[in-house]
Length: 429
Image (cartoon, rainbow, N blue to C red; front, side):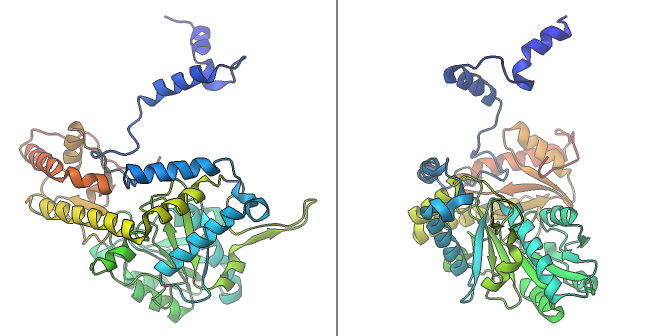
């Protein structure tokens, strides 16, 4: 048996700087060995969120643009990098147009959907000081399936979250939301669509509540922002969710999802530029003068921003229409075939690229493990127990293979030949 000192010596590189540097060739070789245990970042057999594959050509454009700006610090863009200012202006302007924003709307780039939601809550909280002065103990009301970043933000800011306990028809519980509004409520939230079910909340109805009670309404369109505008042009019926709905105050859209930018690029869009006053943080009482930022992050690479602009211009409307058409066609093939397996049931009516399905007669987690054993990687939901599929362009080529295996595994579970081992699920750990 090796002594503790020997083991520590072997693992020295894991917990302290080596006494001497090594050549890049040796460091790279060690990293390549470590990387062999990782799953690929995207795969036809993987349905776990985060890949957003738009084609090898799109990946090449995004990566090359990112490399051009990888060492640029976007914090200082207005001083020394006017090209980054241009990119942000163009991206925000395009998304405001896509979200049917009125004249005078505004927006900014963030590093991801979580930061966009953090800034939406922060902005609503600051706005409430002027518009909801009676809210002495601020609360925000969110649907059951809304993203946990709302709760994370509230935890950081000392705000109470009133999260609904169920999702009737897999959408926001409108009646429960209305019952939850009180003098301390400052903000309502809605999803377009929700991550768990891929279904758009009843946003016009929630917006009416926001207008009736004088509340901020944020729509989380991080997953739908680059799907729904193009789906409408392709003839799909998409419920109202954007700034065309009176009462929608802000919207978040991720460009690093199916906008195909490199991580991490999201946007927070505001109905009126005047609301940006509540978003911005400014500090002057220190030796270096004015420090003023719209968003949470300070220093950040300009690479993501550059990749977003490059891909949006590379694809154009035609390129996005082509990709959204392929994804939605693939979704319909999955939905039709899963519904054709008697033991399975689709939860809700998915409107984007997220599908959740379960069963009232077989152990769906056992089905998931059986599919994993066959090399298919997907996520789970716990309420209700479900397999969660996250579709992108690559899945168009494997629909038949996946569904053939799915039917066989379901039969195996039904007859006791496939047993479940784990009952839990996690989104991120």
